[in-house]
Image (cartoon, rainbow, N blue to C red; front, side, top):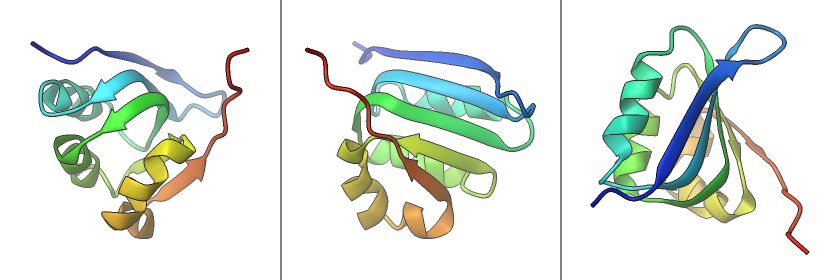
Length: 101
């Protein structure tokens, strides 16, 4: 059974591709993320602010696109992005989201 992951594609106001992920990224759905990134040409901003989990399969997909990807990530994902070395190779912006009340 695949872990829930929703991907939405669009463009920022400056024309750069924007791919927004919601849910969890793991071995059951990393190929879906990879296919979405493969289908997006040129530079891409990947918004992970609503991603609650990212495993090594997801990291592999990110590394495959490291030369053209920019991440928006919540603080929860920063340790895995940092320890893996991804933050040394790509731009990662920390985005703090408001907690539900």
